[in-house]
Image: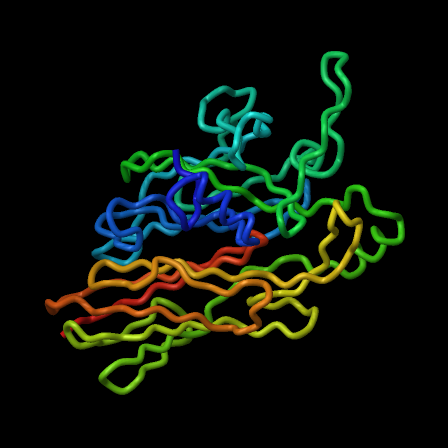
Length: 331
């Protein structure tokens, strides 16, 4: 089983959650160096919009990294899941979502992309609304929010052609507040900033040769010297106000413990991948308290001349995901 995170296990995911970096669609476990891509691999899944209301259609797409061409096509199968984790399950997604029981798992589509209409009852099943009673039993307990106040519907991606295990990921739901006062609910509905996808604006490649800044539509292209020690610096938009922004946005969060509604800033995380050389970090980023809008990593280029690829996957901690890829010619 793989839950898409930039870490290597469900337990690492839970640790990341406590640090306010509970990211919903990140990287599968890779053998050896976690950043090294040696075969076509699903690195990330993105949903648009990044935060979806019940009844709204979400567009799903996957990043399949290919060491030869940058991206690849593969047979993908998409599934939704209506199961919540059991109390004894120390994981953000129920184990039942890995099975084929039609009571819990329903096919969504086939191909590189898929569209899924979020069930109208999603906020009752996975959110703050009490789920309906079944078989004469009392109504169920509402779900607990994550560190950002968010709720998520689980989905699954199968990529058998790539030899990967099923990939579990989660779609952030736009639900009403639970446990808030009427005044807080009104303020939340009027002022809450719906999440937008983070977006990498550029990548600066700094080393022995003059620095190169890559920007515009990806894939970006750059030439580097064999074995050169390079610093990679990528940046995203600065988000100083409440307008939609592809960076670390500030939004309203309701704390169910203190019953306080207040502003919180997103965390940003970058997962780095390459087909060769040596990356110093598999992931970097900024915490909610850090207002810098850039992140750096060190990469030693491969020792032999040839064509290589870099991929940068950016995620905010409210479920937004996007990526950029770089074609690197080593000479």
